[in-house]
Every structure is written in C-alpha cells, then in structure tokens.
Image 1: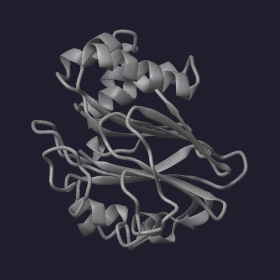
Image 2 (image 1 turned 90 degrees about the vertical axis):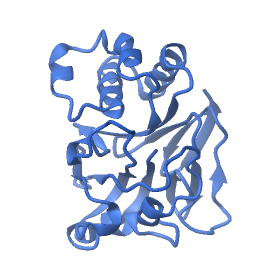
Image 3 (image 1 turned 90 degrees about the horizontal axis):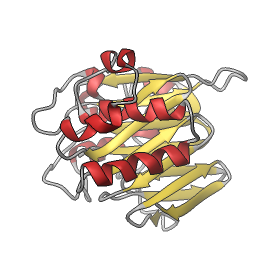
Length: 247
C-alpha cells in the first residue's frame, strides 16, 4: 500500500529525486519489491512536496496527481526544473473502496508540514473515530479526501499544534494499536529541516551519504550504505544523519 521517500541535503531537482536510481520511486510505482501486502503496483496517483530554499520561507509546496507516476509528464517536465534541499514524495496504491483522486494522493501539506502514510488503518472509519474526536469539526470538514490516510493526517496535524513530532507519531501509533490492531502504519512527516518516519508492518531503509539523508520504503539503488530499519521503530533524520529508536 504505497511507497514513499524523504530527502534532505544539497538542492536537487524534485523530478530527479523521484527518478533517482535504478529502483527509483517511479520504478517502485510499477515494480515494487517489498510491499508486504496483496497489492502488486502503486498505480493510483503520486505526489511530491518540497520546501523553498529562500530564508524565512519554509511552507511546503506540493504537486499531487491521480495518474500513475510512470505516466505523468510533470515529473520529467515541470518538476524536473524545480530545485529544493528537502523533498517528500509518495506513490499510491489505493485501498479497495477508497477514491482515486488527486486530493487522495500524499503528501498532505499544511504550512511547513508534509505527511505521507504507507499502509492501512484497519476498520476505518470506525476505528479512527476515537482519535478524531478531539479534532475540530472544521478540520474534518476540510479533509482532502474520504480516506484513512487523509483522516490520519487530520489527527496528526491537530496533535502537532500541541506537541512535538516524535511524541505525536508515537501517540498516534499507540492509539491505533489499541483501536485498530493489525494496521500498517509507516508514517513519514517532514518540515523542510527534519524528517520523522515510522515502521509498523512495512519496509523502510535509510541512506546517509555526502551531506544528505534519504529515507525510502525501498532502497533506490544498490548502494551498500543503505540500512534497513527494523519493524516498530521511529527514525528522526536531519542533514547530519539519522537516529533510529524503538517505538
């Protein structure tokens, strides 16, 4: 259910980041190698968020599409000419019964935040309701799509108003472990300077090299410096490196 990546480092082409490596995110949209679910492709849309390098301007910009990543000319066109020192991107495999629209594609953004969910919330929407009870009604009415990932984003965004990201992701996963056991919850959050990622029943790897860090559902190439992240861990990464701790 979806693949995603986050990048921090010297400025790169956003489109180039999506096509980087012989097992790039675009390749993973049609030929993933470690899905750990019944899906065989990620053909239900894609998105990319990036941050302006201008000092004092760190709100995330985003492009989302309902097209398969391999067929959208924006990647080799417009996005190839956009450069940023921070990128968060995802390709989507929609859960059965959920809509395939551009607004359902991650990343979801608000101010400096960009968010992606690789997985599924079991028993949605009933199991997500207890977590959403504290979210303002206005936020729920403005959900970008009627999906578990968009609802999860509303919960995460609301909690970020009162707590720091590591605690927020830990609390959300703990709550869903109780309300929706068996959910797959690889979450990826970024603010342009830091990336936070979790592993719950899905794959994730980290590459730290040459003043940059890449977090990806699957390694983008055969570089031996890729390190697989164990299940039920949280990764906190900056341009200086990544720290992995158990959830």
